[in-house]
Amino acid sequence: MSRKRRLSVEDREIWGRVAQTTRPLSSDLTRVFQTEPESGTGEPPAPTPRQKLKPVPPIGRTVLRPNPANPPPGHDLAHPLSEALSRVPVQMDKRQFQRMSRGKLVPEARIDLHGMTLAQAHGALNGFILRAHGQGLRLVLVITGKGKSVADDGPIPRRPGALKQDVPSWLRMAPLASVVLEIREAHPRHGGSGAYYVYLRRAR
Image (cartoon, rainbow, N blue to C red; front, side, top):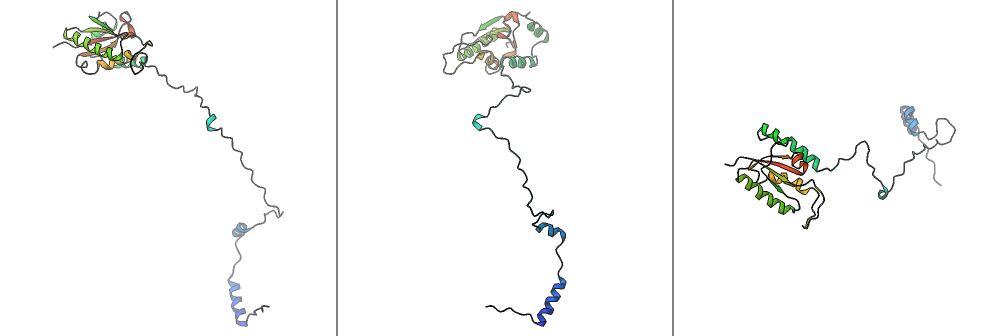
């Protein structure tokens, strides 16, 4: 059996001095380390109820619905092209431009690109415009149609209205850009949105 150690008189004196320097824990620390509730009931506090989470639908079944307040933009190719042409600053004589816009200027020559593939139409347009410029003509008419679906035998499917969309770009590219002064949609009496007025520069 272990023997209890008894303090000497000197040890007791030292311990008494140490005990006098000790201070009780503050009330704040007491609350931190307190294990019993302050009510004194002896019962542990009730657990905080967990917030119920809304179930998330599976990714494969999620349905994205359009917002009716912000409908997606349309993909009308013809309308923006007409607006773009109307916003281009006028390069030709203003008085002649007004007469042309009202259908009062009669085209001196015309070409109809209906039924051609894009490659055929591009080559035919280049030849027609260069010949007309060489002959000193000023106003010619290029008929493209309004964009009905047609069969195409090329390797790439031909989109509806391809000629109507591509002709203005061809007229602004070499070798035609140097001889073309103005491009506008024709007056209804000359084909309307299915044709273009092409006003040429003077031949030198």
